[in-house]
Length: 137
Image (cartoon, rainbow, N blue to C red; front, side, top):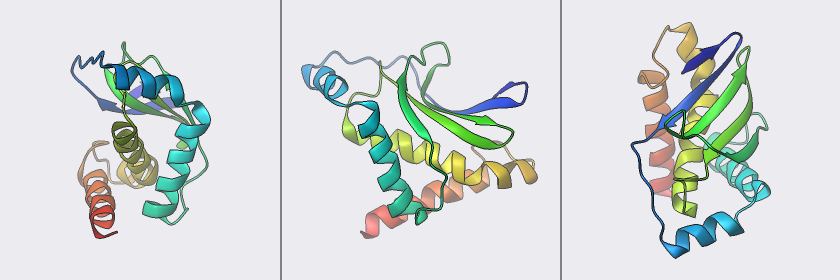
């Protein structure tokens, strides 16, 4: 989590993954911001019973952050989720990143109260819960 005054971001980090496969370029070209937001809304409904706040989801250049996804918060309130347009190149990977970032949204307040790492036990439990839920559907 990178601190910036009262604004901070939780991120899903990566290691220099780049794919130039044609189907990846096609996914990126065919998937707009409204599609990403629709993925978020579906994950929110399926995994969090619609209880997460509505957050914008955009493509972004996260090269400098070395991240697949980042969720931006202001005073504890999420306001933007970004997915890296260079590395998130399939629908299944986009869904994985959005699930990960959604767990940051769901656990941010509790993890801060417990003074936990953003990827600590509260976050890990969230990820396990939504994976278990997805496996049982």
